[in-house]
Image (cartoon, rainbow, N blue to C red; front, side, top):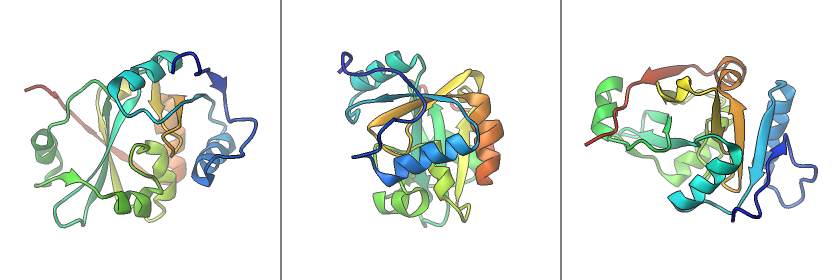
Length: 185
């Protein structure tokens, strides 16, 4: 996998064979004047593959979890460092929501226009009704760059953290809550 991946500046030159949701992500970032690096790859279905992508980008890709409460009335997008373990109990108490679980693939499509494996903060541009609450582990905010998917699992982006939180989020009308996750047993 490593030999095939290259780091590119910005959007792909050609869009044939790429999903519309990916192209919309590039269009939106470009319209905001946000610079980004990109690499294309096979879907990363294990941590080894993720580490290879991280190496090419020079950044740790965020773990993005799409969660909901038991009643499916509240939806959350959690961004946390990719190397940190997720403990539902730890998060539930901070956001006053009992019984958190992973949201269904149908809900991912409905709210973020994203499929499993491609969950990303970029999906918030598709959440026009602001149904999803963004939760960000404080450690994500400490890094100069974040790594995320452009709404597909076959490309990854490296974007300045300040551009994501100070330009992208206001442009999509979203705010975020900082959470503290220890992620240890």
